[in-house]
Length: 135
Image (cartoon, rainbow, N blue to C red; front, side, top):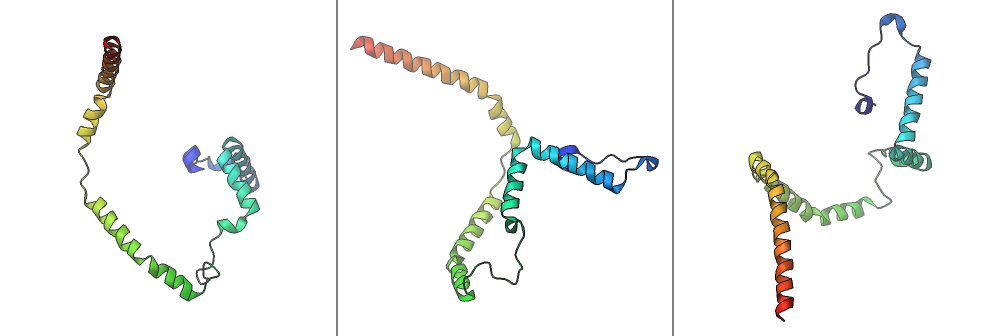
């Protein structure tokens, strides 16, 4: 709600609503959000049909019906992928970030590049027409 409506405005101490009124107002605003944004409505439908998807299981319970040995073998078989991912992430972290002024200068040239592209297309069409005439 904070992201959509910003920080809550403070009411003067003499004009505070009751908890029931605040709850009713929150429910009304929630209903408005759900009716305006289809994604939230779809999420509520998914939650109502599968509420267990939105609750994390107990950490002591294995994530599947597989035995601990089977889970361990699956994890260990993917160990090289972890080192590969680490290597890739390290390479990304070590790569320098380009100077933003270079990107800005490229962006400034987009109109000029579009004009050059249009000229090239016109030249290609003219060359094609000349080839057709000379045949």
